[in-house]
Image (cartoon, rainbow, N blue to C red):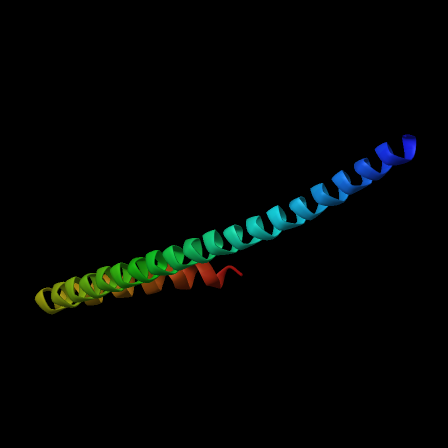
Length: 93
């Protein structure tokens, strides 16, 4: 009788192992699908952020150009002042 019980236990264990293998394969597929979806969402989000940043940069550049056009002397004076400060900073090195 011990042999019959052991055989049943071995068969049960083999069945459980096969069931676990199937469950793991299913989980792997589900995980791959979830990761694929997350990557697609991440790419879309990054693309939207890139476009938004590009628009903000263009807007800032347009504003700067308009300010320089409206106040050319002030712009030259600011640029000269920044150059002078940077010159003093780098001169010490």
